[in-house]
Image (cartoon, rainbow, N blue to C red; front, top):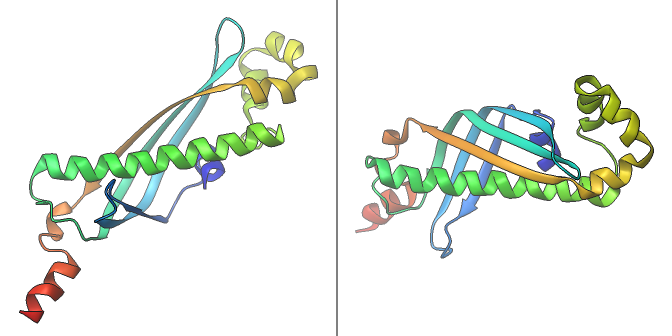
Length: 161
């Protein structure tokens, strides 16, 4: 999943995650996301700046007892989704670094932006990838949270009463 995020190939996927205390589960549908990966030259090596934004995202289900009509409660759930995406991106990048293979196309971006740097880096490119840092910024905006005034599990609980 992390490589799909880093290559901007997320079109339709479902993220499911638990709350920090493992009491609530939520499922979030990502209909469209935009990810921009930019190599930034630092003093010693390049750093990758990753900006991921979920353009269209909707809750499918949540067992939270938060009031989804309150902005601060929706923000909590958005932050949880952002953390899941951030973790997936970091895991994908760790795999790239471990394999020392440029699956994301960073070398091409550096070559286009700064050919002189690329000429210097291309011989030691696998080691350069292994040493690159990642700066990840993720934004998730939930659409239509008011549709879930009561979660499915709470509706079932009230039906049993």
